[in-house]
Image (cartoon, rainbow, N blue to C red; front, top):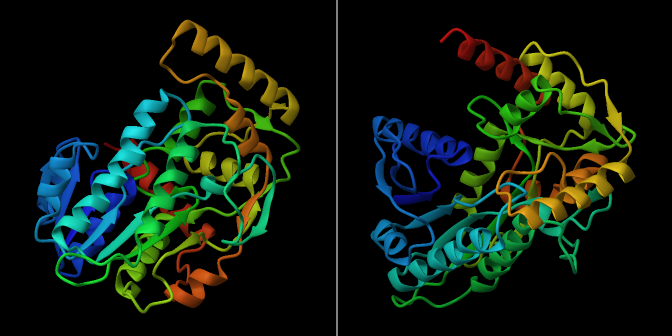
Length: 338
């Protein structure tokens, strides 16, 4: 089997490549940057933009399965940038599947596609897409997810049937994290991190190894007659915990004291809206210290019913939050020694 991993140089993409190569699977990656460490794993690397249809088509040639992980994340930037990476990029992957008769596509989505700014306490996949979004990322990821699921069941040129599935891993973290944990550490050290809201909101994150498990299981289960085909699944550790308690524990792994300063959810939202207006007016490209989306994310509950993933994918989170934090601390200590 030949597998393509888009975004293979990112946190999740690289972890998927590593696991596939450890099992002897032939892997090709497509990423904007050059990642020699992927070649050291034995993967074939292609450099290109996911929004470039020709680059995607070339990288996908000869593949039997695509893990589409590439995306533009974050909460700030021009809509067109998010649309090109997340919507056009996904359309290019779907087009490659259609033209090259690639029968399996596992798409990395996000729980934020159904976030309406309110508490998400034990919701399942029946939760609808909201009418409005507070940021370009969830809006464009929702459009991408819908396109992927709609394409399921299409007949390909060779007569095969296209099978697609969308996974919604929530706040992936662990050793190798280049986004969530470093961001928290940087904000805490600069004194810009404050608790938002009551601090009692529960979240259910996912450790990196568990997120990889879910993707590989989806690739294995995916076929036209599978209950997996054409569906979206929340993926988490199935361990709802206090968001701010978890953040304090993550910061503790880096030797940083717990967050003590706080701001009300209402004030954070108002400040976020004001800063968004100012930054847009001034044309500033750097991210504001607070946005409406971040304010709502930090003050509300985000935990999910993952019984569907357990039933259909056979997914069971193997690494607990406690064990994951031990591994995170060890990794952060190793970075300090370099």
